Image (cartoon, rainbow, N blue to C red; front, side, top):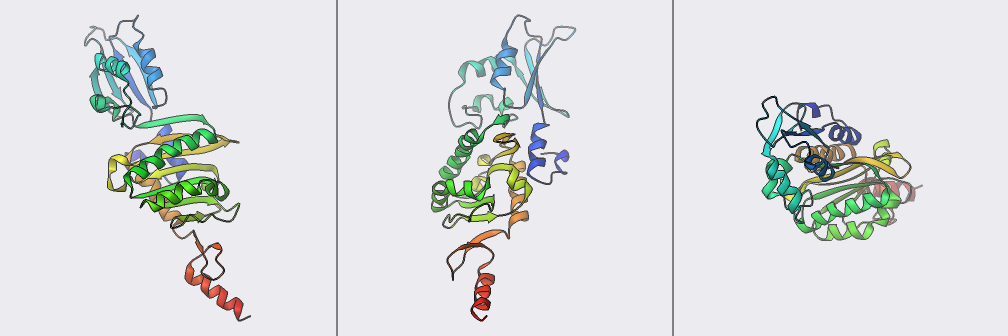
Length: 279
């Protein structure tokens, strides 16, 4: 995140920040009959990068690729390196779903996935990836918002399991139903537009910055979302920081007297019941 990120305020701002941070992979002096630009376009389809082909007057340097954003050059590699990437595409532990260490000079700048037409089922699949990461790390905190408390209830077993494994769980939703009991997890029942309109899962990495990741999606039509999946550590920190600052005191807790989940603090709940008992 750079200076242009200073204006970020809420979750939707964060989504738009990623979507407008397009990168360009410019292929210089490649054979016009070579279809590598089409192959790269398909490979990086969701990585918020535009593939272009250009020729210099001298025709030099031959087959070089320049990755840049609006303000700076991020990487310069031989096109042959990109050919190797397309050929190998190994499955591994890399953040793009591939073992990317060999191609880190390019791929480390492309740790963002954008999408424009995810439905609820696709978002659940993407959420599972981040939840599995938190499960493997076994510590840290995960912040998740499924828009409504009734949807959180459907994910009860997953998040209760994460909490048992040592992950601090914070779940957010508009209170369309009684907030579910997730054990030691924290349920934030809040009536806020960004919670009602946004689907998100953010993991703080559990002390390992390389494990930080966030999924952010805004519903623009019924059951249709656009958004981004990012591994930008500063952006993940911003998202979690925003949620913590904004909704820190919205936790639904189990009342020690009536045993129901209520949005309040334990001392206030006890005081309320004492007052009711004396009336």
